[in-house]
Each structure stands twice: as C-alpha cells, then as structure tokens.
Amino acid sequence: MKKGIRIIVSGGGTGGHIFPAIAIANAFKARYPDSEIRFVGALGRMEMEKVPAAGYEIIGLPVQGFDRSNLLKNVPVLFNLMISLFKARRIVRSFHPDVAVGVGGYASGPLMKAASSHKVPILIQEQNSFPGITNKILASKASTICVAYPGMEKYFPANRIVLTGNPVRKELLASEQNKMLAYETFGLNPSKKTILIMGGSLGARTINKSVLARLKQIDSEEVQILWQTGKYYFEKAQQKSLFCKSQNLKVMSFIARMDLAYLVADLVISRAGASSISELCLLGKPTILVPSPNVAEDHQTKNAMALVNNDAALLVKDAEAEETLIDLAYQIINDDKQLNKLHSNIIRLAEKDSAERIVDEIVKLFPKNKN
Image 1 (cartoon, helix red, strand yellow):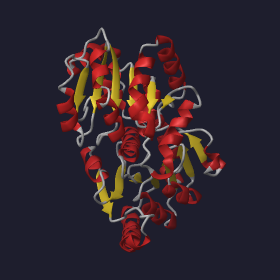
Image 2 (tube, rainbow, N blue to C red):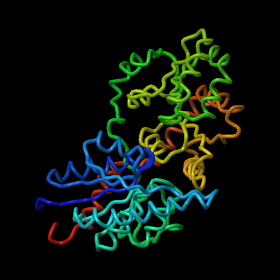
Image 3 (cartoon, rainbow, N blue to C red):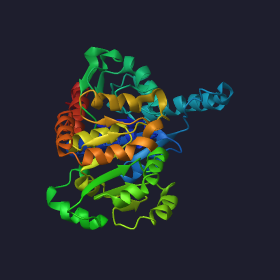
C-alpha cells in the first residue's frame, strides 16, 4: 500500500451518526496508519466537538435541516445549503479524497454530491431499518451502500447493498472479569438483579417520568435500578429519588463507563436509536425498547420492530410508558425463562466486526493505483 490514501467522512447531527463514523475511521486508520482522514460536519452540531475529541480534523458546513411545518423559515436554510454546496466542492478539490464515506445527517448531502461530481467513489452507511432522507437521495450516486438490517432492497438498489451492521464502540466490550469492578463503581449489590434505564446523553422525558411514577414500587422490590436521566432531568430526578429509603435506585446524569453499566445489566430499558440497538444486539442484552416519537419518519419504531418481530426485544409505546413500562420491566426481570429467550434471540441478530467489514468495502473502491 502506497502512502497517501485519503478518505473523507461526512455526516453527523446525532451520536447515532457520529459514533459509527468515528468507529469506521478508527478501523481504517488501524489498517492503514499512513492514510489521511478528514471529517466534514454541520456547524453547531455535536460532531464539531466529538470528532476532534477522537483525534480527527473536521470542517463545518452551515447546512441545516428543512422546517416542514413552516416553509417560509426555509429561505435561510436554502441559502446555507448553497453556501455548503460551494464549500463542499472546494473541500473535495483541495483534499483530493480517494473515497468519500457518508454516514447520514445534514452535512453528508452537500459533501457526497460534491464528491460525486468530481468522480470520487462514494460509500454510504445507513444505520436505521428505515433510511434517512439524505441517504435515500444519495443512493443513486453511491457505489456501495452498507446497511445494518436485512430487507433494505425496498429503499436502495439491491446490487449495491452490503449487510455489515452498525459499528459500535469497542470499549463497550468489557470482560466479565470486570463485573465486580462494575458493581463497585456504581455502588450496586452483586446479589440483586439490575435494570439499566437510559434515554441517551440528553435523557428521555417519558422514560424518566415512568420511573418517577413508580418510586414506591422501586423502593419495595428486590431489584436495583441504574438510571441515566440525562443532564436536563438529573436535578429533579435526584431530588425526587431521595424519597427512596432503600438502596435500589442509583441516579446518574450521564454514565461515562457504559461498558461497566452494560456488564451489570440483567435488563435494559432504552430508546430505539440505531447505535443503541446495535450495542444491545452485540452484547446480547434483554431489552425493552421505548421508541421516541420525536424523530423523522418514526424510524425508531421501525428499528424496534426489526427486533420485536424476531422475539428479540419488547416494545412499549411512548404514550403508554408511564402506565406500563416499570410494571413490565419487573415482570420480565423476575422471569428467568423470558430473560434467557430474549438474550438468545437478540444476540443472534448481532453483526460482528462491522467497522472492519465496512473498511473492506471502502478498500474495494480504491483507485487501481492505490491497491
């Protein structure tokens, strides 16, 4: 391999786009240490912080999402889109990438369009079971489309689809030898079963309300709960949880050591984002999914149903969660037969070594003089 292989990775907006992008870049850099990798994201979005923290350069575009409820608000959006297209073409011309990788999100559109117009091979990675608008538009220009779910021929050209799964953070794959460390880290009792409740780094309002509505029940059960509230809900949750007299409830704003949290979890309650589902499959965690109703095209419900239809997870609708979620969680965690069934079924859906498999597909797109 000659020195000087260059790839450009674009997209972001949410952790579900950003973390797979970083995982792909890390796998590529591990295989080709002399390669150059450049990220392109959307100004003001979380990739502008997370990507540099992972050790990569990133360029921001002023691109934004369209407001479907008020068309007049899209005038500045269109203006910023034109600026982003111009800037994307300039980035491609100056960086000369050998391959462009799009992971979805606002910034992916202008950059992938610019790459295509300069005859740069394109690979897109779709994390969800129902593709985002950007990837749908880009599919006709892509040489390869890496997907996380089977049956994506409904949305993409079948001859370009490769089932790779979603890359997950390798640090999540903690050894069972760390289990006692995990219990100590969170102040949990190793002799009790544990429910891990999480709604993402910002939290999930409905899931948090569901917990608060059942504090007395949590106090009386012989099951402990590790609860990531998200920063916006932490103060209220912490104050209300003081009424719990037992040690069954551990409240945290954000869990930095998710590897340890997953290690102690006998049951997980989670939103149904693509990255979370991929992690849960890989780790084989019995799961109750509460899809967020506040996402485009209701794709979290579609993600969840891909598991539910395989008896690999349970689903509680957001509107019903406050009444039923915690009761269902106790029912499941006290049923070893059901826990084992969920574990066996969800782990069968795991796609392993996804980042490395995506790198294999990127390599196939290299110009002949770089192979």
